[in-house]
Amino acid sequence: RVLPVIAPLPAIMGQAMASYTLCQVAGQPFNPSESVDLTQKAYKRTLDGIKQHAEIFQDAVVQRWVPYKVACHLWGTTWHGRSSVSSQNAGGLVFFPWAFEEKLADTCRSWPEDTPAPLRPENLALMTSGEAR
Image (tube, rainbow, N blue to C red):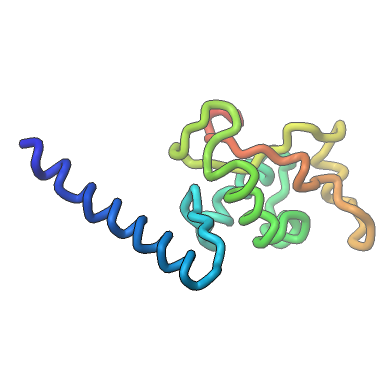
């Protein structure tokens, strides 16, 4: 019963050691990713928290303020694919504004395109959908 659980571990360790060795030989840094990359589908789901909070129904408006590359950086580098509240990496993670102006919904709808957005990446925290409520 224990063998099926333990059997893949030497192969995984060997692959990690081989990756490290090849990077050293090539003179490249070995920086393994701590979380899974954010896909386009997951990106759109993570913006649901903002859309519900600010009562914005158009994806294009939220995507203009939080572009895909910025969301990927926040997801992987800042929050490491985990909730900022409970450190869970499951449960429908969404970006949610932790600091926002009063009446954000009205502000977001009437915000001019050529000025800085009321939603900024430094205002977003990654949480499960339950924690965001």
